Image 1 (cartoon, rainbow, N blue to C red):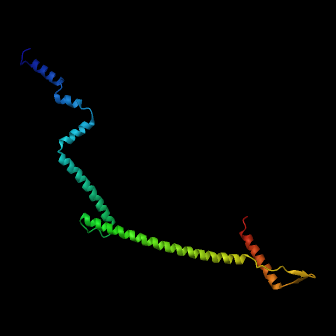
Image 2: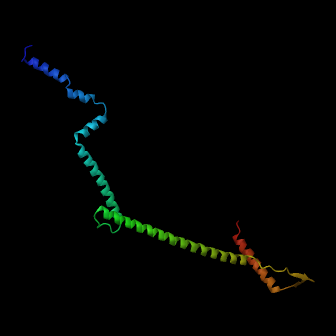
Length: 174
């Protein structure tokens, strides 16, 4: 074929399409994603990467400072991180002092309540014991078929025992 004929140009185009360029061969030989990531970072200047990381860190800190500022009463009008942190420290210290005073009050209330309970329990137990225990009496004696002793006391004891037995029957488990 003669140079310059249309057949030669077509043949040249086919050869160019089939053969790989050096750039295409490099792209096919990249083995891992790690290399690709490094190549992307290499494109950016190192100073801009560190600036982006620093900006992200500052934004996180600012978001947390805003959250803390919203939690502490009276901290909304304060500007400057140092002043905000000082106010937060004062507030947390006052909360700590308040918790300690409430714990001390709780101890006093508990001691008073326990002492009152013990006193009431002892008084109720004593009253219950006095009401349930019949008085110790000497047994009545019968001489010649007649009752000897205090008849009124004996009658009161019989009534008391009857009432005690009927109360006990109400509380018995069926």
